[in-house]
Structure formats: structure tokens, C-alpha cells
Amino acid sequence: MSQENNPIINHIMSHKSIRRFKQGAKIPETHIEIILRAGQQASTSCSGQMYSFIRISPNIREQVFSACGKQNFVVEASEFFILCVDKYRLDRLVEKAGGPPRQWPLASLVIGVMDLGLAAQNIALAAEALGYGIVFCGSCADHAGELIDLLGLPKKVLPITGLAIGVPEEKPPVRPRIPLGAVYHKDHYHVPSEKELDQWIEQMGSALTKEGYYQKYAGREVGYTWKDHLVRKFGGKWLERVEKTRKDILEKQGFL
Image (tube, rainbow, N blue to C red; front, side, top):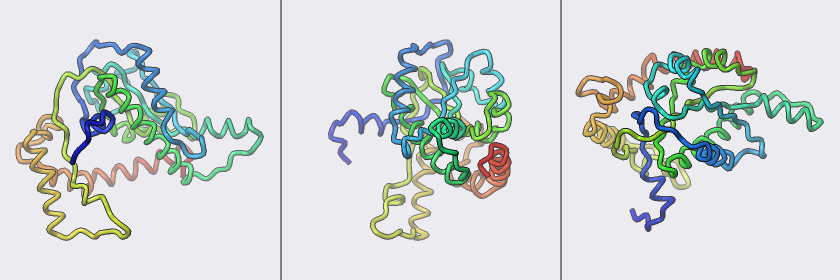
């Protein structure tokens, strides 16, 4: 597939998560502002901008590190943010504008997550365009209860992910994805065949095994593959625990 030397397309296609950062490297405040303003320029439903970006300063980084599963990049990266869905601010603005805020928790959650996801991707692209590496930290949502208390988040503010930004200390390859044909449908949904499913599992597994991805980043035994990962993450107790945790947090923050 030709990318026609388009710098934006090339930039998107070269993305990879960075989990090892040069410690002590500083990001200029001008770059921080550019990165966050890029997030704000993402599309947003009805101009609601239902998100907040919480920059975590060094004095509480260790607490966030402990609360979010003790992943080293939380403390090693130059900057770490907690990205949140924020209906609290939107409700206050609606009240200020003269209209009572309506409480549609599930609709608000869907709109908020969409708004935040678009903004988060813009933030990541902007950071990479300035020469930095990034990695999202999904475990922040797993430990949202601790973050809500630690960061003083009011009702209707929900931590969704963390984002580490810094100077890369590694040069990993671009990570594989399942073929475009697996996610691209025309007019009607294509139900994959057993053969196609096997091919996609093999393709992903071979590429990640070649890198030693799960041994390098997750401490897994040699032989552990994407197939094992699928079963452990989405077919085992991990998702069951995530479901319960998410439900409890959504209730606590007023989204259920």
C-alpha cells in the first residue's frame, strides 16, 4: 500500500507504544500546551468537550504509580496525565447558561468516552509529532476508585486512561494489527470463517513472538502468544473483574 510520501499518513502508520523513557528528560511548557491544545481541537459532540486532562506532578507521581498497578513508565516518563470523561463541568455550564442539566447517564457516558477518545488520540499524535514517545495506561481505569479519591474527582468525572509522554529509551518495531479485511466491511457485515480466524491469530502471534513482546513487557514465559493473551484477557477472570470494578465506579460517579 502506497502512502504517497504523505507526512501525516506516514506519522500515523509509524506509531508504536513506548514503555521505556529517558529519566530526567524535560518537556518544555510550550510543547505541553501545544500537545493539550491539539487534544482540544479534536471533534466533539455538540461542542460539549466532555473531558478533562489532569497533569500529575512529581510530588504525587509515586502515589499514582502505586494506585495504577506499579508500571514503571508512570514514574519514568517526563509527563503523566490522567484523562477523564467530565460531565461535571458540562452540567455547571448548562446551569450557567440557564437550562437545567438533564441526567442521561448512559448517553452521557457514551458521548463522553467518544469525546475523550478523539481528544486522547490527538494528544498522542501531537506528542509523537514533536518527537516524544507515548503509551496509554489502561490500568488507571482498573484502579479508578483510588484515583477518584487521590485526585479529588467530583461526581460525573470518570478517569478512563493514563497517558505517559517522554523521550523514548527504546526503538521497538511498529506493532502488528489484524488484516484490514478483518475490520473493513462493505454494505453488510462479513462473518469470518474458521480459517480466517486461525489466520488472524497466527499472524498476530507470529509478529509479537518475533519481537518477544510478552516476555519483554509482561514477564511471560517463552511460548506465550497473542492466542494465550486473548484467552487470558477476554476469556478469563480478568474481564469479569474489570466488569465488576467498572460497574462499581460508574455507580459511584453517577453514570449508572
